Amino acid sequence: MTPRELAADICRKLQASGFKAYLVGGCVRDLLLGREPEDYDVATDAHPMRVQELFPSSVDVGARFGVILVVENGAQVEVATFRSDVGYSDGRHPDRVEYSSSPEEDVLRRDFTINGLMLDLDTQQVLDFVGGRDDLQEHIIRAIGPPDLRFREDRLRMVRAVRFAARFGYSIDRATFQSIAAAAHHITAVSAERLRDEITKLLTEGKARRAFELLDQTGLLKASLPEIAAMKGVAQPPEFHPEGDVWIHTLMMLENLPPRSRATLAWAVLLHDVGKPPTFKSAEETGDRIRFDGHAELGARMAVAICRRLRFSVSDIEQIEALVANHLRFKDVFQMRPATLKRFVRLPGFEEEHLPLHRLDCLASHGSLDAYEFVRRFLQETPPDEVRPARLLTGEDLKAMGFRPGPLFKEILQAVEEGQLDGRLTRREDALDFVRRGYQNT
Image (cartoon, rainbow, N blue to C red; front, side, top):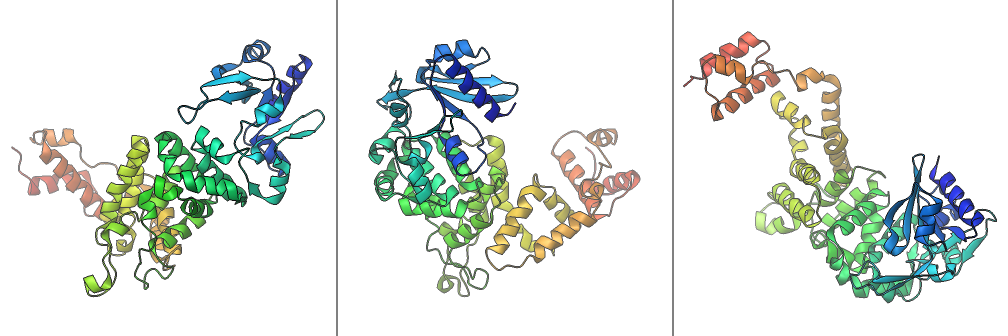
């Protein structure tokens, strides 16, 4: 069963039981735009307990706020009771809700007019109490009611306005835009996890450049990611970066970032040059050209701090750190020893993230893909067992030779592997002889 089929079944069953039931929100917007919705939501005047009685497979995900999740045959649809919200002390959740029989009253509590449409599946009638259809036609993102109130209720709505404007190529209504600009500094009141997830959507929905331009124009960028805002106006050496400053370079990479990219790759694109502003040195200072000495290393540390601030998982932080720390190493691939190159391409997610990051970096600057193509050919032409060869020796072998476990173990095993990767050691006997000649057991 698809979510659309389940939503239709829910509406029919609710209506057959004497209740009103409509598709609501983003799914209606997408259907009117000729897009297939990712998920479906239903609004009804049936109270949550009644919804649960009618759908025994339902899950209480927010009955306090009138929301029940109906799950059947692998599909799920949220069913929300018509309501009005009273007070938002925490800047996200209503202090209390009052159930209503009026679909109009329910719509008036929602965020933007294009998300405030309801659809009767049986009659195909669209209920529009807020001018959402007109705003769809005019390509406008407009808050429902007073924008200041909508954004006080949930500060994250400011970033969502940017995301919808970027995703659909719409403009933000003037009053809505002004309200965002005036309240942008309050974005820090949003939980780190929610802000992280919303920015990740900005990065991965395929319109990241436009999204970050709007974040900048509204003041949300400086308030939420000041390290990125600091890139503006930071000049780069024109011989390597004819495109302009660090901000323009980053925007160009975001523009070319494919939709639905891995979140860690998307964040690495955003953060790969975050260390340039604090390491900038002018041509006058260096005596030859603009330089950013150590920016990859500092950038990796800054990326870790930003990701920790936004509550990324440990594994995601490690991957983003590695992407930022290693993004300059591609310039050295032509001179790398075989062992060094093999270790480089063994980095986790190398072909899926490190290589695409380098390609985006080149296309947004000098345009040369020589290193990219060199590494791709190496990967294509080098058998996997040469890149990740089976160990010639193990710790047990070293014990049998009289070595005691300790730091020397690691040093010897690494030296043996280095010899393998360079092609100097190919047999177990060679490795044993190498250890006997080069190390003394204790």
